Length: 559
Image (cartoon, rainbow, N blue to C red; front, side):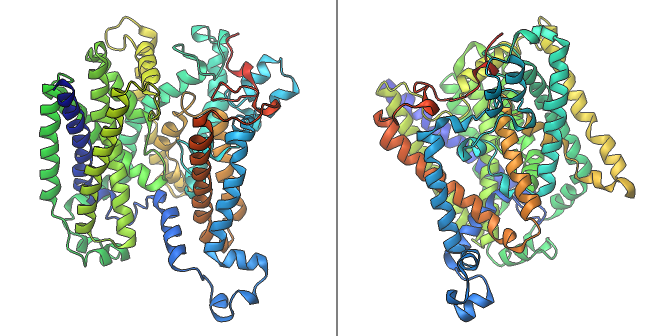
């Protein structure tokens, strides 16, 4: 009987998270779905694939004369379906090397091979160092896009912003901080992943992660404040001006706001009752965590919808963890992670559902069928998700296959690092709170200067985008992976941006690479590695018992 009660707790908790995000997404759709300025570039590859399946011929020449009139190259460029299939096959074949045959490609610190015993060279050039001059690359599409997504879909100005931030912060500020030897940094790797100690890179990225929290609010107020006020006064899609998509979708029957409000209220009651009755979290902490998640949804949602980044950013996660620690919730693992789930996961769930709403907006799915489909999908996915997890837990299966951020390690490491933020017992960590002041101030000078015609280009300077993207390092995204991600995006943008075929095919390239990768992952993980079938050992896969094959181990070793 006890096990049934526990399952009910888990089921209603997961279900409430789904529908809290759904209700909040519906409330915010006038800001993050209806305006034409919110593009959501993440949807464009899927739209390109759907269009390809329905319209193979893309030029007048092909429609008039057929493929026989074209050369092989022209046929490949003109036939989008053929192009997509070829890219998918090439990706499928190539990914066998970094995922199975030659894992060393995933962390390819080629410059370290020049002098394998040189500590300084390893720290400065390796993938898990700071990857100066591209000395460490990630030649695996999975590692490149695992958390940051595809670099091919981002606007050029967004890539330039991130590139500027990477050079400024990682290649200039981090070595300066390392050289000052604060906290005996010189006895640790400059950018390696060390259990509970701050390295120079992790300290700087933690600082800018906190800075992004206030920077995104100030940036949103300065650059989008007037637009938000206008959208707040907009009641229906008919008042959205001359946007083609809004005019067409307004012909469908809409879903009233009260439907989303009732759904959100019901899910809130379920969450409060479940958490309080299960003694996971008091109801007032439930309200606090939801307030934190809802507070960040609009500003970070605006940035994500325009730049294609920040959907799963760590700033909100860190803040929920920090506030939970300050409330002494870390005494219970269930309490601290319940607080994070209701704050961070609801925030992410809301943005994911808003992104889906924008996809439906583009491909003209009516609001009411979409509402029904998302409700049904939320219920079914919650049921299967908690059912599978509950089955594994009850069967004694210990392997954590569904963890994305490795929450236990990251969370408790963070609690150890940030212990004493508010009680004054650890002033060196408490100094990081100056990041909030820096984040609130730094967007203001560029905004003021951008008012002048001579400095109008500063309109494109986006500090929240820079801070949050760089903040992934080094715990989640190594410096070499981010450098490779940037290099791919910028090379494609500057090399092929002026050609019309690139505009038509770049999203198909992104989708094809993802499709080939996913097929390879399924085969390798289920049919081979799950059965303990490994590729014969050779120099490029000597470490069979590790998940990271880095050719430069000195980059992460303590000196």
